Image 1 (cartoon, helix red, strand yellow):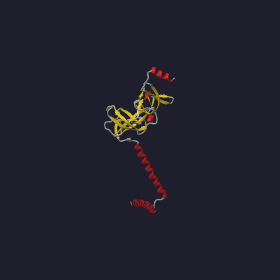
Image 2 (cartoon, helix red, strand yellow; image 1 turned 90 degrees about the vertical axis):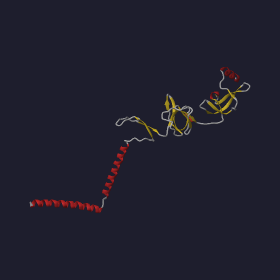
Image 3 (cartoon, one colour; image 1 turned 30 degrees about the horizontal axis):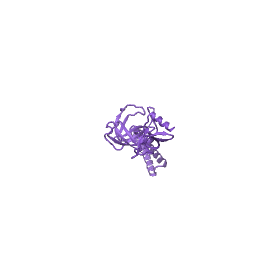
Image 4 (cartoon, helix red, strand yellow; image 1 turned 60 degrees about the vertical axis):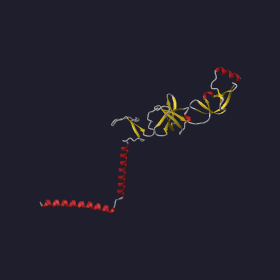
Amino acid sequence: TATVNLTAAEEKLSGAESNLAVLENELELDKAGATPEQIAAGAASVEEAEAKKLAAEARLAKTIIYSPINGIVTREEAKVGQIVSANTAVVSVISASRVEIETFVTEVDIPKIKLGDTARVTLDAYGRDEEFRAIVSEIDPAETVREGVATYKVILNFDSPDDRIRVGMTANVDIETAKREGVLAVPARAVISREGGKILRILKENGAIEERAVQTGLRASDGRIEITEGLSGGEKVIIFLPQNLEDELEAQKL
C-alpha cells in the first residue's frame, strides 16, 4: 500500500513539475513580449478573418435585390423557391413621384429636337382640353427600327407631379423645337423649289401671276412654313394652279 501511495505521489509531483514548467515558460514569454514572427502571424490571422467576413457579406448581398428608385412594386412574376433564367423581369417598380413619357421620333424630325425642349402633352384619358407640360430629358443616340422605319427613342419628364397621371396611359406629345411670333407663314405646298432656291406665285391686283424668290424659315407641324424675305402681309399667294393655267404660265416664260 505504501508503495502504491508513493508511486501515486511521485506521479502527482511529476505532473505538478510539468505544469510549473509550462507556467514558467508562459511567464517568461509574457515578460519578454511577443516575437516579430508571432506578431506577423497574428496580423495575418486578423487579415484572413477580415477577408472571410467581406466574402460572407458579399455572398449575403447577392441574395438581396435592391430597387434603384423609391417607388411601388406593381408586379411580381416570381415566387419564393422558383428558379428563373437570366435577363428575365421578375419584379416591376414604378416611381411614386416621377413619371416619364417614352416616344419614338422619325429620323426626319429627330435633328430638330434637343435636350430641354418643352412639350405640350395630352392624355387620352382626359381628352384634348387638358394639357400637361413636359421636358425632353433623354434622346437615344442609336436608332430603333419600328415597322421597318428608323426611329429614335425620346424620354420626356413631366414638369410637376400630378396624381392624375398613371402608368400605361396613352400620351399625345407636341414638342416645341423653335418658336416665332408675328411672322408671315404660308402653306408649305405653295413654296416651289427651283434651281436651289424657293419661289412663291403671287396673284397681282390686275390678275397677273408673279413668281417671286423668297427665303423660308421654320416649318410648322400643321403644314405651314415661315417666309422671312420676299413677301409682304396682305399679298395673295397661289397655293395651286390647274394644269391648263400651269401650262399657260410655262408657255409665257418661253
